[in-house]
Length: 279
Length: 336
Ligand SMILES: [Fe+2]
Ligand SMILES: [Fe+2]
Ligand SMILES: [Fe+2]
Picture 1 (tube, rainbow over the protein chains, first blue to last red):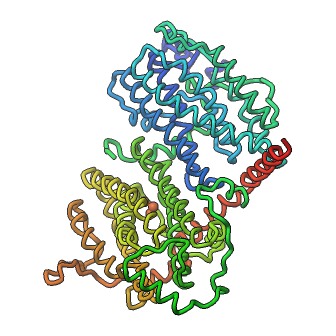
Picture 2 (spheres, rainbow over the protein chains, first blue to last red):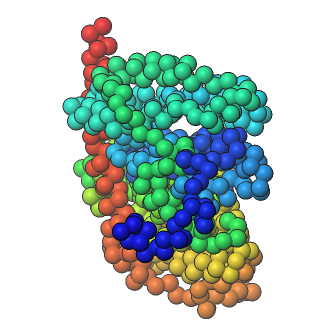
Picture 3 (cartoon, chains in turn purple, blue):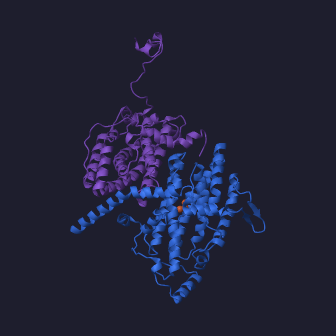
């Protein structure tokens, strides 16, 4: 019996030419490179900032509650600017709120690392450390971007990222070289995060297209500086750098973990319950 | 706990003071103290003060600090659901300000010879009090507007007067904090105004939030003067400068026109302007509800304390790690 019959589909309808079933691409459908590029930058910061904001009122000490909120504020502020630029590049009238609140999960472009649940304080800190180290060098490269808006964001964001890197480095050292319990927890967090770090440095046709617009982001150079910072801090923290095994990726093209949908269902609930409302 | 001491924002010597064990006050010193108060002088940490003055201030300041910290929870509840990026940022900033206020006032209490961490433990074990308002749940986005408008608004009425309190460190803390509370109130009122001008569903959301928060906001000023055992002594020493009822009335008079501006109704059929006294007269407050909430039976008392305890318990390993690391570092420095 033919498969189409098993499925209850009339044999004639499944024939080629009756209805086109062969798509034009094997991969997900992406938008114009500049829009995609800005969405990736913006979504990384929106989703990570949202995760950090979940800590507000629940930090291990009051001072850290304030510090985590500070970082959340910086990241969400950067995200708002970047999504505004993405909306402008898109040119269909979507602003930062339309992009943050009215896209579905598959339309988000953040790296998977950003959307993972917070875990304990150690996980949140390790993730923030790994991302901040990446951000510092990325913003440094983007300072010279031939895009006034983006270069402007870079100039502000680099200062913030440097502070985040300093703050989280201190905590990684404290927790790594603290008690046996804290060492174990933070080493586990590092091991858990590691397989998501490859995506931060991955480049695809979007990066190639943007590079053609003379965005000179040398990812290999960023990677080697990131390696140096990470190795230095891990060494001071008496932590072991995990091996670069299979890396998880997909967020850049909308192939997310199951966690993102739950995050968005919370983040978007009020806005989506009231279409057309202003807040 | 040692961890926290290493990272505190104020550094003060640690004195353990059990107030009841202190000797009785010398009447001559009390007289000199009261003369200073009467002359409008401010009392500073190193000055002599009656045992009761110290304990009343410790009570008031620690309750205030606890309120700031517990107060982070009802608003923190809506950070992840804030409906625009701008609102999300301002709500995070507001909750963060409250954490800062808590920290600042805890530091202020240490000038009275108590330890911030002892006070914090009293909050966690349920023996310390905090403002009853934070035991009410936040049920819609409109609560973020109404809390800013009414709750921060009530706090400002209280704290503007406390900025003139006789104890210097508390007065100065209030001056600084009041600036931020004013900003919170404006921000909250602006959320309310946006909802008031919004869709029918947004207006309904606003009205519902006002209905829920109006009476609890009035209770924030504490029991009526006739039932406030501390008032006379606090007024005499100029710790307080106005009675609970005076402050409540002042708040109502300020707030009614703002409610009119929003086009919402306040849930009190007895509310009417009294041309003679120039006050807005209001209906009876349900003090039994207040007493229930104070006694721990409000809608969220358990949840609020549980949240603080959970954060504290889950943070233990972090504090221990920081202490252990600091100890290793100082050993290394000593050895070098
Ligand atoms: Fe407050
Ligand atoms: Fe406050
Ligand atoms: Fe406030």
